[in-house]
View 1 (cartoon, rainbow, N blue to C red):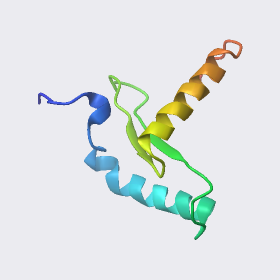
View 2: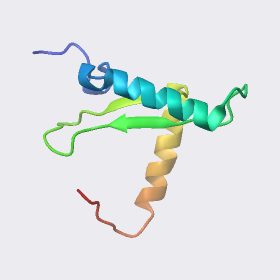
View 3: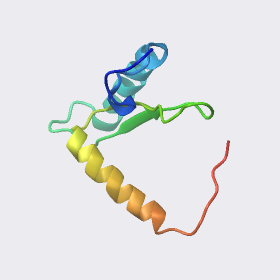
View 4: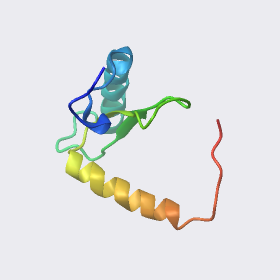
Length: 88
């Protein structure tokens, strides 16, 4: 099925949407309770270990611009660390 948008702009896959929404709600309530403005942001990313071709389902309680900034800073920290290997 051809897509008219980039993979990163695709909606959360239907098979993950409701579970991710519930997890995001619980995490937000746990971290922030009723505090306003919210003191803590979070990101939930779900991706397959194999055959994902770049697909990542994403939810957050933060603004996309803030998330992009934070991810760039985090990647810079990761890239400055000694070489490590992930676990499958």
